[in-house]
Length: 359
Image (cartoon, rainbow, N blue to C red; front, side):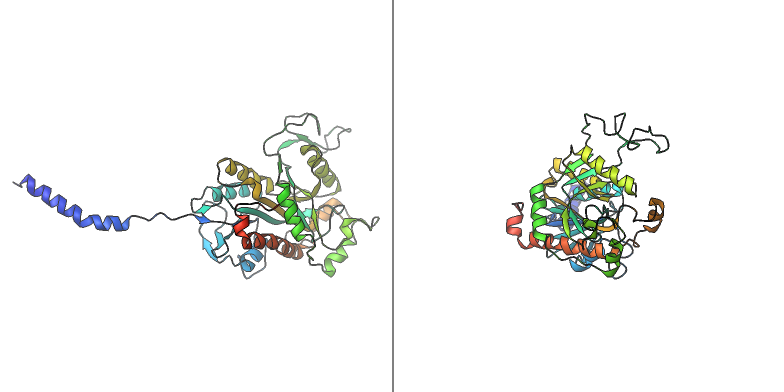
């Protein structure tokens, strides 16, 4: 029979033997990485580096986002420059992917995003009455174009300008407007003004190809902004997963943005993801994870949102394929050329910009 005191002694000796090992194996809590700027791109064509580029590649290569961080809860692995504090997020195309990827980043315990600035930098279709191919647009308003009722164009009443009806309304643009959460987001205009003023005189790439394409648009109005070489401007984004095209749809975009912003917003470009991105950032701000006043949206014009003179909207849509846009490569270059000025300024002046948003 074993003596109870011997069993106790054996237990104590065993515990003392493994205690140092247990203490040594205890994980040391890691301090979250303080991120200075998050650059959000929406799509990449192939690899992140070294091949035909999408929205992400120039940022990865030129900002030296060489540290790859696994991100299985999002669309694509993250990329970081540890020296500058710039983090790259590839959200995936469409509102749903962007919403999920941004929320996943905001809840990731590896990062401190409480002082981070967010720059959405992507391509878009532009109204030739507002701007030209390759131009860069800083946005104040982001308006959702998906959440609505719709009647097929073949069945709308003859007095209606569109079959697109606001949610919980019975006719197009019915008043009073319902202020649905997520229909329109107003960015920090002071920060947008700062970014615009910092970049407005930057020369953007122009090519013989896009100069020739400009001539096909609004030939009756050679003073239109659509005939200018690429330039930096301010305008607002209509965001939606439905890739629409044509003069009549462009007019709807103007009317819809004006309606949803009570006339304060002015449509310039159409994208797909931005209201999803802002919805996640808005909710993350309520949870004190991010500062919603530190968000900027930059869209560069890869194509016009409507047909050129002499062809139909359907014929124009058939020509409009990703990577085949009239200014695809120049628009990618413009997005980085304009965006990096803002990113570099924020990083270089971090002792001031960490706690004080530029005005």
